[in-house]
Length: 143
Image (cartoon, rainbow, N blue to C red; front, side, top):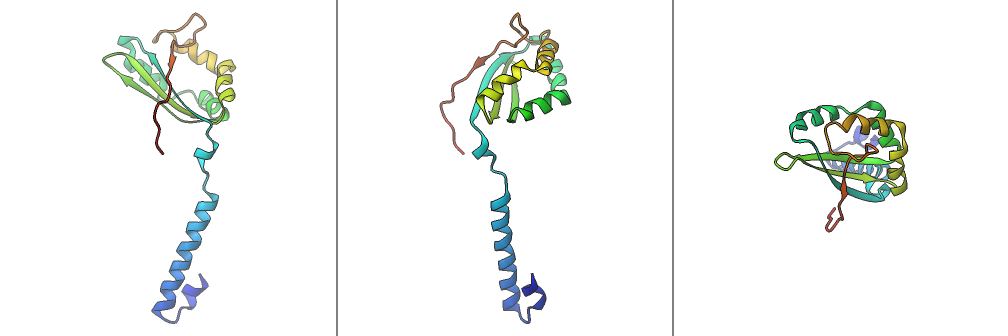
């Protein structure tokens, strides 16, 4: 930055800005969190929502409970999305997780159990309130 202030001519001004740009690039590259290096797995699964409950399903997720969001984040969940195919009532969910065992342990939290109980009246669920779902196998990925 000193070069910019003390620049006596146009050449030193250009060189100064180039050095500032290079320094910024290097610092951002060094300190930027690289989420992809932290993630252990990408998960995808399908579920269903009852035909007359599409709007209610969306309403209950916008926003989800703060406690549930905190729990998901604390268990290493990133980039979680759910998509609806209205003609088939199918839900497609995609999530990136840091650790498989932490992902699986979410099911044992109180807030997750409460959420599943809250959602069971609008989607097919198992007797223990866990939504019926089928995990999908990844067959292609590109970064």
